[in-house]
Structure formats: C-alpha cells, structure tokens
Image (cartoon, rainbow, N blue to C red; front, side, top):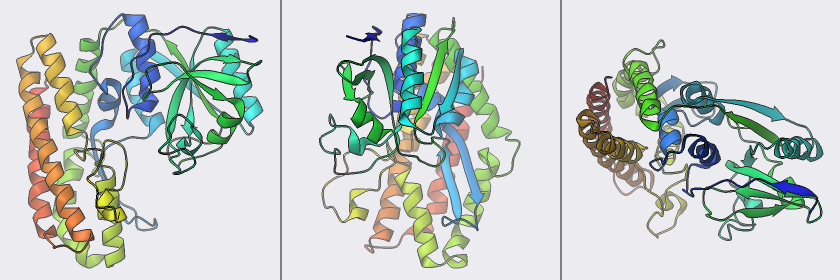
Length: 351
C-alpha cells in the first residue's frame, strides 16, 4: 500500500454530511457522545430570514436557518474550538494532492460538495439522480489501489472510492456550498464539553433571533414576512408565487427535497418535513435531561409543537400546488404560531 489510513471512531447519522466527520473529530478529541445532528442544528437552525430578491428567479427568500456550509462553519467553529480552511482548485490532481498531504500529516479533511450521482454505494442515486451537495471525511488513500478511504454520514464502515469516481463526483458545484474540487482542512483544538458548546451556540442564536442587526432576519424578519405573506399572491405572478412556496417547503425537509406529491409520485415521503424543529427539540431534551436543565426540557416541548405546525404548513402548500384545494389564507396564522413558538422556546434558553 502506497498511502496511509487514519483510524478514527465513526458515528453514522444520515442527513448531516458536512458536519458528520467534524463531529467524529470532536468526539475523538473531547471524549464526548453527541445527540443526533448536534453540530448541524446548532449552526443552521433558528436564523429566520426573509429577503426580497426581485432580480432573482426566486422573488422571495424565506428560510428558518442558514444551511450554507461555510456560514455554518463560521458560526460554530469559534464556539466549538476548531479551525478550518477551504481550498478550491481548478483540477482534480491539485485537490487530491492537497488532501493526501493532509493525510500524510495525520489530518483527515472534508471533501465536497460531491455529486451523489457518482457514489456507487448509494444504489438508489448512483447514475440515477444528481444531488450535488454531499460531503465526506477523507481518512486515507492508497495509490496502488487508486482509491481514497473515507467516512460517510450514511454508512457505519470505512468506505472506498476510486480516484476516477471521486474525480467525477468532485467536479460539481453548488451555489452557496462549494466549487468543484474543494478540500476543507480541519484542526480540532477544543477542550469544551458539549453542554458548554450548546450553551454558547444557543445564547448566540437567541440573541440573533430577538436582536438581529438587520431587519430581514430574526423575529423582525419573521414579523415582516407574516405581514407581507397575504400580499404575495396578488403582487407576484402565479408562477412566481408558486415557486416561492415550492422552494420553502423543499427546505422544510430533513434534507432539501421536493415532496413526492409535487413530483407526481403517489408514495409517502421518505423524509420528514419539520423544518428542523424536531431535531432542535430532540437535542434540547437529550442534553436537558443529561445535565438536569429543566428550562431546556421545557423548551424542547415548544420546538416539538413547532414541528407539528410546520408539517401542517407543508400540507397546506402541497395541497395548493397540486390543485387539491386552496387554504393558503391560513398560512399567516400558522406562521404566526411558529414565530411565537420560536420566541417562547428561545426565551427559555436564557443562560
């Protein structure tokens, strides 16, 4: 074997690919166990945003969190205590050289985004569907076998990917996530336990929600969105309005995915559409019980209620878009409930 393999304990958990490997590095450094989607939710959830984007194909941007990889890393890295740097290369040869150099120094690195169309160990997607926003943690390579070794959030064992397969998967780009042939180096320097990390991250999220420095984010942005929502149906064309609703419901999913009904598929959706509220609830309940924090346990119940209402909103939107019935006039009231639930939940997270 001309190469090297770094041994790292791996915890598999689907739908958190850009964080899964970094969590593995944290677990090794801190000796902790983590609730599912811990880093993902702490970094992405709760940063509500409502922006008018008239020059864009999508005329309004509405999101319950920021799922852009670099922005999530920027938020959580100083709280957790790790350093990261993205290297974007024009060629595969430059990228793999950098990634192998990291391995030679003893450091796994995050590769991606990758297009899952080229990952053979996902047979339902392999050469079937392009999903260009997947990430893996490279832990080794073998020049004789012409492959890398990596950890994937959806698999428990160490996986292999040939250089040619990686070349194809790595050649994709996705706006806001990464350019082709991107390597992210990681240096984990943390000494914090998960409770301290959660307290700091949630305190910052709480502050951003109630006191956002910009009018289009946080509770201020949410109030503006609810006020303007009834007007959108008449100010925009039907196509523009429908596109906003479809995009919004897509990002309610455990992963961004168009609901089956909107794709003409009669089968039930395989993922949940809870907008991340279910995951936030789970994290708060798990850590609240472990560290005997009653406020966090109580807050988890609020976010669980939010998940139910988001699911109701999804059903209203889907029914409207497929022409089943139009109850979109109920959306402002439903979103108002969500806003108050977020407010009540975040108030309980006061440190």
